[in-house]
Length: 73
Image (cartoon, rainbow, N blue to C red; front, side, top):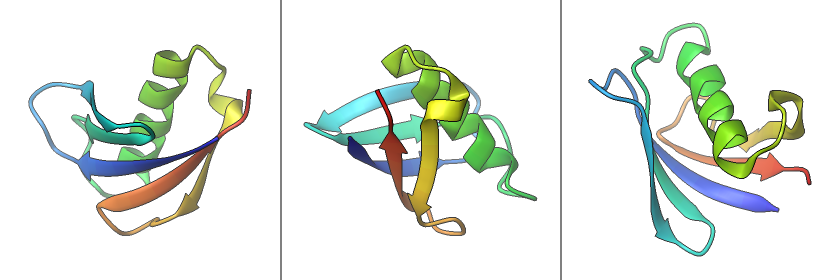
């Protein structure tokens, strides 16, 4: 399943807000440096969907706030 994610990096808290069917707002504490924020988002999505981190893949938006992740179930 593909999910659309808007990322707020360098946030005070880490959380996921559902905006729609497959659309989420994800706040992470990591700064958007050297892919740290992307890895933090993948880890949060993995815990949200109850799958290992290896089942989450970034499809589009590596350097953008708007990203698309693939969640393999």
